[in-house]
Length: 252
Image (cartoon, helix red, strand yellow):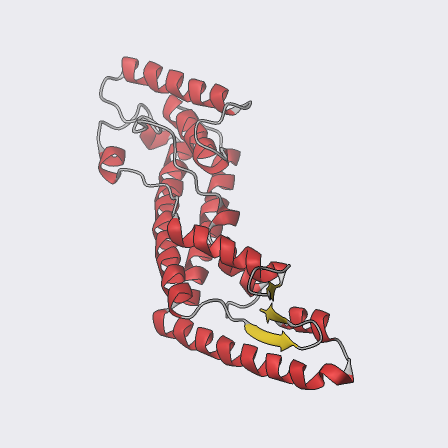
């Protein structure tokens, strides 16, 4: 891919830079009002409903994951702005072009085993290693990889809890509402999605909350704190730029 200044960038580099810009500019995360969650009288039968107890555990894990995700995204922004994703530029005289490589696979693809390109390959590897070393040093200093590990561990714990919640029978309206609330927060891919079954699930949750609060005015019900669309946090999009760069195993 060529541009006006005759610099060619591998698609992997371009994708990472574009995704990084998105990650730096926009952080879309779910935030629940802790005061709203704690307000109101206990829901009917809440003390004896294991599903409702699990919903409370899941909700705490959900908020913890959101906080950790915000932290690692802030550190990602800081790291990218300070160091930039590791890459090296190599000028190819035969093509009169500058090529950007960002991982060893790019170098293999570009140079292969051609003896005539051995010197250029060695320079690209050295430059990439030097940039990588700067990235790793800054990463260690600010704690980005540690923050990412913590966020991923919290997300795994949250997922385990929601799976247990869905497998646990509810014996109160509040327990059923908790299940619907968790499904909406975890599963709906976009705000106010119009595709089946999301409008139907939102409607069912509203009905449950209304019935329960009619029977027990002032009772808190899962989902009763909702005042608008649930913000989205799709786990695979938490930090796409760094995840693409890391190729799955750069965090240690």
